Image 1: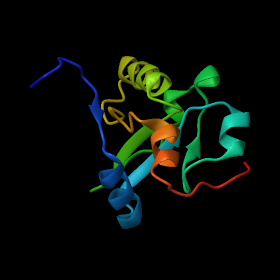
Image 2: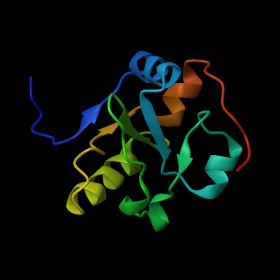
Image 3: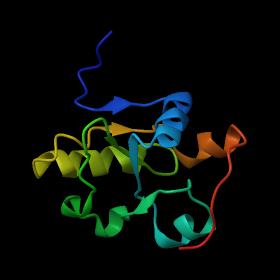
Image 4: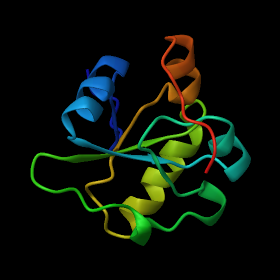
Length: 112
């Protein structure tokens, strides 16, 4: 079933497996206080308020850029901005965001 959206969602299990295998370049688009309070290990910081698609990592062969936020709204906005500037590779997010990550009992890293 297609929603017509140009964006994809990754499941918690897929995200964890991709991170463990080094296939995921994870980008957190929450604000600095949220990121510092707890983020997924290895996540790069690129807050939506100052979002710069040119600062997104470039995926190597077999890698994928994944964007996440608190619950999925800001990550969609970031993907839209990236698409408008030609970044077709930044089209997947962890739609449940940090809330789903925490709800699953997954660990976070504190600090910048």
